[in-house]
Length: 263
Image (cartoon, rainbow, N blue to C red):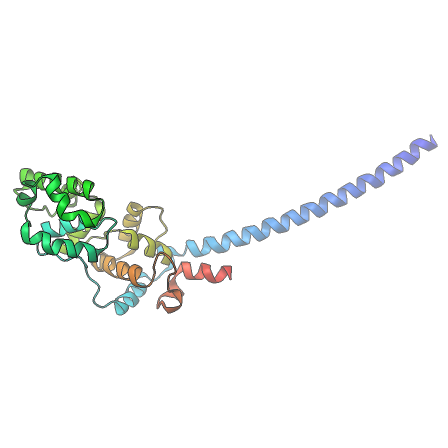
């Protein structure tokens, strides 16, 4: 019986020790969880500050002051020329496109002109723009459809434009806003990057970004917002090494706030 009592005492001590260790672990784990939760909440707070709390008009006003001459940087004389230039601008600089079209449009500048060319002839003219094989096919097919359906004219309707070969929402938006002066937000790589970095929107792809921007920005500012966001993306808010220190809207920018939080 004595031996049993001794074992019982040892057992109780061991149990108490185990309980203390468990409590210590639980407390430590709880502190880590609370810390992680605070970090997540902090980042979440920054992200959720998008269109709900940001003064979008104030941001756009600052960008318009910075880029008073913001406009489409593709050279064109007609809606058709702009359509072709925009197709050529995919993964190519506007500077390069303008060099190509300055000679191209002297020879061919209507849908009928391009519909009558072969793929090889178009390819030869646009080769330096890159992706010339697929772009040549799109230009040829689009020109033929314009001749068949619209007597060679470019329609001023989003629904009709996006049915043309090689014309997506971005290309259609560029044509509608610049050639026809219709309110539109064309979301290219710069608009997508800059609007999500700032926190005007928080979307995973260009199409969702376009719809979110249409909600966040007053309709009368859609078209010009497209230009100032592009200018900002090309000149300051670059994909690599953005010039945050010089940016006039850094205090309203989620990306800048996140950078400072990690320092």
